[in-house]
Image 1 (cartoon, rainbow, N blue to C red):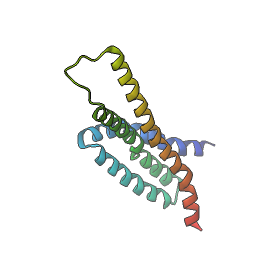
Image 2 (cartoon, one colour):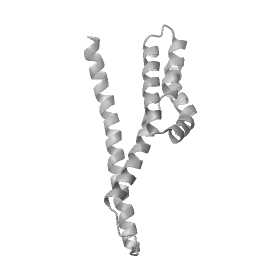
Image 3 (cartoon, helix red, strand yellow):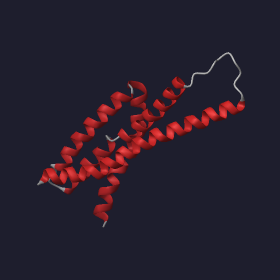
Length: 142
């Protein structure tokens, strides 16, 4: 009922409230710093969540997990930046010659395909984590 809804919503409220701040942090201090802080913060908040004794503590801990969880957004940004960097690095064209409109369209299409492939891999790894983590946790709990 309403307790489960509040419980599930708290994570997304925390995540939404801090998304812009994580973007600023990643832009100012770097993607790596944002990812490390996010992983450590989410891990500590998850431990706190696992050790709570009351519903109110669980709600606050769940909100903190959401607030400290920026790994997906930063990972997508890193994947996109890597796609652009690697594609431009691999497809250096002569800068002196004029590039036809068809070449620009083909370049954009290839770049979009590479970006799609890389972001797809990032998201599939996240999905594998959702599949494997409960199995590992169940094994370790026994």
